[in-house]
Amino acid sequence: MNREMILVLDFGGQYNQLIARRVRECNVYCEVHPYSLSIEKIRAMNPKGIIFTGGPDSVYAEEAPNCASELFELGIPVFGICYGSQLMAYMLGGSVATAPVSEYGRAEVDTSGSSALVDGVGRKTICWMSHTDYIEQAPEGFSVTASTTVCPVAAMECRERDLYAVQFHPEVMHTQEGMKMLFNFVRKICKCSGDWKMESFAEKTIRELREKIGCGKVLCALSGGVDSSVAAVLLSKVIGKQLTCVFVDHGLLRKKEANEVEEIFGPGGSYDLNFIRVNAGERFLARLKGVEEPEAKRKIIGEEFIRVFEEEAKKIGAVDFLVQGTIYPDVIESGLGKSAVIKSHHNVGGLPDYVDFKEIIEPLRLLFKDEVRKAGLELGIPEHLVFRQPFPGPGLGVRIIGEVTEEKVRMVQEADQIYGEEIVKAGLHKELAQYFAALTNMRSVGCMGDGRTYDYAVVLRAVTTTDFMTAEYAHLPWELLDTVSSRIVNEVKGVNRVLYDCSGKPPATIEFE
Image (cartoon, helix red, strand yellow):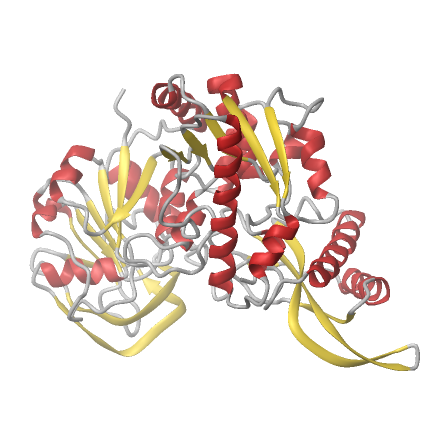
């Protein structure tokens, strides 16, 4: 059966994966590809619709990203967002100019006029703007379907050619009726049936993996986190004992976590896996000695992971494939197409140039975190494993600002354990998407026991989110923060100050490095 698909062409916007996520919420499969994807490949993919993302460029810039004009003649509905809307206007004869007043943040949009895209949307609705240029005049044949006090063409469309565009971002939650607009495009304009479900993903993936792997031997990078655990269980269902799971304890895990992972996946655990634990803490700390720059740390950890796996593979003999629990946010933040690299994930942008495996398999590469959890439940993984706290592959290496040392690891492990204990006691652990303690590189003067101290500051982080592409900081009770702060300062040697992070994503990321 051919799967209905919406194609998102990436022009460098940081929300491109969020667009894909929203399309999937309409039960329609969606993939993101670079804007440079050829017309031939687009035809071969046979998408039901195409969405242009936003981006940081001006259409008049010397090397501004664009697309082939034939794309507008394929008879496939096209939806331009932000930069994508300006590109559509520019290429089809409209006028794009620097706006007299830039718009960033919430704006009231007037949707007067009939429109297939904003059908059912209130006449005045709040949308999220982020632009310096704007469409000054729509191309011939287009009707203007929305505007603001400073943006004459906040939305436009040419129904005869199935071309639609909005200056704002319907994919972000701050656009109050954005999902309604995306639903209108995907389900009504593109006429997608909305029959894509997680069950179909699991069935299709298992079938494809069996065909690809055949009788080959597979090594799985198992960290014990949600993503790698789902990948491991998925592969175990596909190939059984052909799979060997290697758990690398790089010494940068949460307190007691390494033993917990072995209890779950090792001999006598819940799964019948070939399980190998490699204790490599000293090795990783030696490689990280003196390194402070975040990207350098990520790349060192990524390379060292691969080298450990290669060594274990040689011990096993003739391993063909390496499996990783890479998910879509990892891919986008490591840089996709025109998008800026936010941070190299150790299993994506952190990989060395040469990897001694026939192929790296990433069965979850096209899924978001909540979709990975749904897949995990579909595979029969217990809820308490599926909904574990997310933890980055580089571990505490990216929760320690500056150089990573054994002493710093101890401090952040102990602070994090105290924080987690108090979150659970307060009954908030199910309400928060992620929470953890990090260690800053700041030391400050304090007074403890009538003596002067010059110790480190711990920062606490807690966020709410569904897709981890955007997030808001959690409004934790002051009483809880007071208890956590008091315990950390009193119980963790080397810490004399506790801070709480009140920033969202964007502008910050969830992790610190």
